[in-house]
Length: 260
Image (cartoon, rainbow, N blue to C red; front, side, top):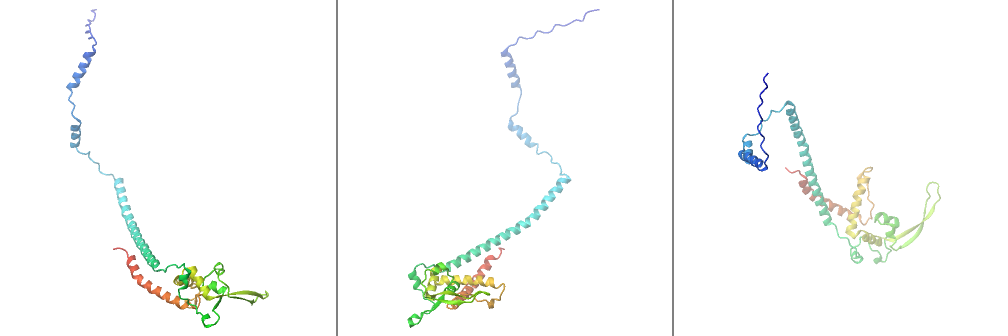
């Protein structure tokens, strides 16, 4: 048998660092790399990727969203209208309150200025008669004074009267304190800030009294507890307040109308 002829391998070249670097640089120099801007431009020319048509479930969901938005729009609009109406009503109430406060009389604290105001209690002492007297109970009821406020007023006279016992109880005597009604009136002016402010306070108490008592009784049968010398001035003040409320009513109605 003839042996297989073998060819000798070519010799491996010697490693040289400088030669390797030169070869790598030559290879990089031969490659043409386009700039980044041109790559982006070419990608933009290609246009957006083709969009796929929506599936059945996606279209149903979109329809439900549109219906929910249309349904939620009406309550929001109603709420906004009600909010605007409430805001207008609050502004009207504030304006009315400001007008009422501006017309309220000033609080008088000076005793000298209080004494200059004319009293409604007839002065019988000038005619040499005994002054008009009032009991402590009536002073608290008619002039809305407290025990601590009555303690500063001098007592004109005291006497005892017999009070029948409750049920089978025995009768007993009670000490009655009498005051000059002029002094009680002046004490009420000092507490409430003058004659006009005292009338204003009585008018508020009267309106509250009628509201509470009208639930069980007729308004015609109600009698507000007040001194007989203050009944007529209180009625005149009440009529003036009613006329003033009528004048303010058209302005309030125009302010509370919803905007078109």
